[in-house]
Image (cartoon, rainbow, N blue to C red; front, side, top):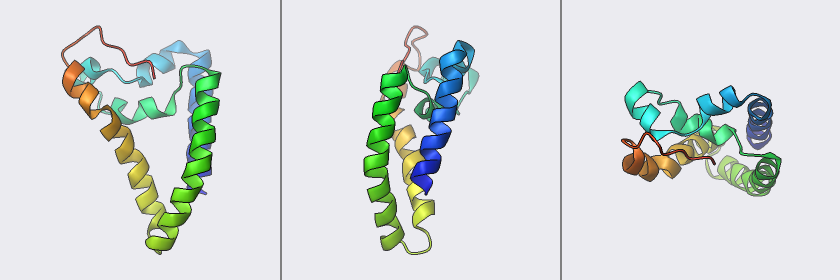
Length: 115
């Protein structure tokens, strides 16, 4: 169920960003803005926007395929807390996946991650 919710939220936010570039710009990962403007939300928000339809469709298909397996495994291994740990895994993976880029690019005003 959580996988479907993540897919739904991601699709809604991506659809909004497709039609409004200002939304896309406010949510995309930008290490310089995180550092200088304290826009920490960008460590997570970038994971809910996509560059185009193909990028969104492929990512959601992969999330659907693997997410359901991981979610059901977590429910089994962590009875009663599986959904909580699954959400925690998803959110922490978003941050960890850009941690190196943040460290490397936090002083570079010209760096833009368009993923």
